[in-house]
Image (cartoon, rainbow, N blue to C red; front, side, top):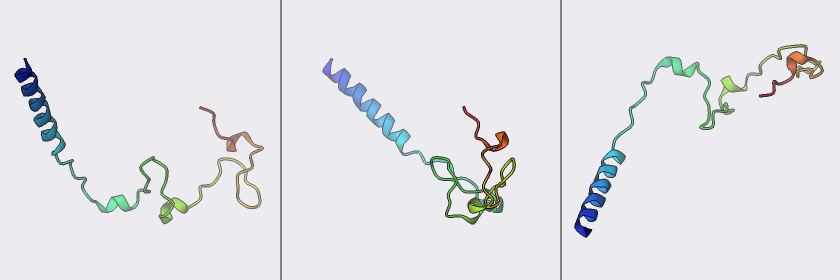
Length: 80
């Protein structure tokens, strides 16, 4: 019984090592990727890039300094 368990354990170990050695598929590099804004691993925009620093215009009226006027429904964030 011990020999059977050790053989099964070795087989699982070898199988797991074989899958760990597989190389991930490489993404093709195109010029179009430069126009797409870059994101961090968590999905938020990476603010080191100029394309991500551009400010979006508010959906509704804005104050004199350009920030959205939160008194209007169009500028308020939707609750999930």
